[in-house]
Image (cartoon, rainbow, N blue to C red):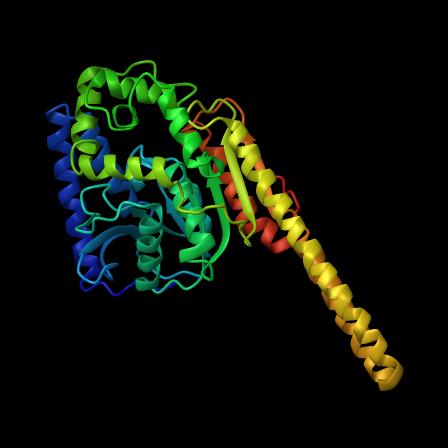
Length: 395
């Protein structure tokens, strides 16, 4: 997929690399380790993975509001299948997918946006804070980038956005869907009850202001958190990630608790869906993963049975007409029946699949990075080549 034109791309990339190298040295000397890590991640995306940041001005949703979205895009065209990655509340795109991008970029044409109100560049003057708004912005960004068809994977809050895109805003553009540790199946009232049982408000938990608050969030999100988390590193991360646009992100959280993905009832996805969950998730219990899997699988089977019944009724009346129309109609009817049976075999395949990552918490893309990346590659590439419902061993 060809990325948008970028004048003087080589010179600007070289300048960015030199600037980042100088910034890394300056931050290291000042012991700003979180900011150092942030600059190092940008350098890795530019130099090693050949991804570059593109700032897009999106069509205004209400005719007046200005919205810009930063997307990490491939620097050069390729024949790899496009994959859209949507992050959660724990950081922006490069922090969230840092351990997955090296493997995924080998197999996919990756697009990783900073969702609106995340990162330093994705901003909007719109008063909208809903999941449908985020889904519309991500879908508009992919259209502006010229990507007509793509798969999407989202984790946590990004899973809500991915589900919404597949069901509504980008239904015709999304091929397959990966939802990771996302409470999509929980009703808004259920999520509010879960939040009310906590010792802290949702804003205090997910948008910490102190080193102690961030330490709590890391330990809650990971089954095996880092053993050493000094205050000066955590404070630096808070200044980097939790201060700018804090008010807008708090409003995103309140809207999520109020309306979830913006559906009532939750629709069944028509796309093949992979659900990945950590068995030690303390944010969204693994039961929600099983519930989402059962909901999609059962309702898709019901839809298949309804279409089969409708077809059988049609066949019945077609059979009656063969008495008058002769053998040619019979041959046509036989061909039609065979095509339908083959289509229904595909439809009744494993439309929804659940994978549980052992010894991983909510941040399973970090704790189980290799397994998550293997699941995504197998589901989006290998099984698509071989057929639905086929498990492929990964090396």
